[in-house]
Image (cartoon, rainbow, N blue to C red):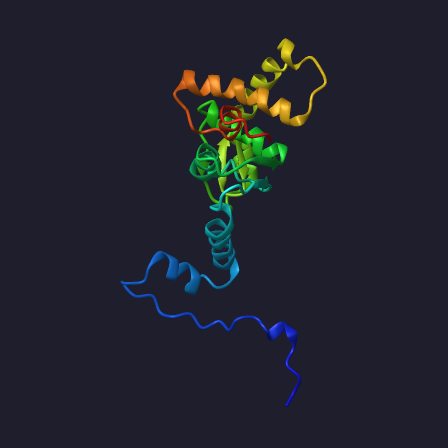
Amino acid sequence: MARKSAFLSGKRIDPKPIHPSTSITELIDNNFVSYNAGRLREACQLFTGKILEDNVTVGLSLSGALTPAGLAISALVPLIENGFIDWIVSTGANLYHDTHFAMGMPMHRGTPNADDVTLREEGIVRIYDIFFDYDILISTDYFFREILKAPEFQKEMSTSELHFRVGRYLAEREKILGTEKKSLLAAAYKHAVPI
């Protein structure tokens, strides 16, 4: 008999069929076995097994185009508001694109198959399958240029302080525009979560 490789020591993939009586926990634990479903299962188990315990510090690391896809609105802001996130490390792009939502600037579902030349001719920016008008970038840049002129920004500061101060401006903008609970930076400011 051939020697069994250590690579074959993982749990055998043999999920049970889903039935009307299958609970969410059973579905996730027994049927989300591999690929991104497996990563979702691991995240759910981490959440219920560790994060929900008392006195746990949770740091969140963000990379990839999460905020343009609306994940700050649907998941990150609620997690911050409910005290599940203690600190965040993020790419600047996620924080930049988060600003669009606080300012009520529309992002649209698109397709990854669109012709880039046609999009450029029509002034459309694409992040994979997310489309938005080029003027959104111009308006966002203008917003940052204007707030960075304020006296409070005219000193050396850490990136967490910069993000806190930007979050304050975005929280004010959200309130004025009625776009509250849309910005990661604004939520982090309101709940003193350093980014």
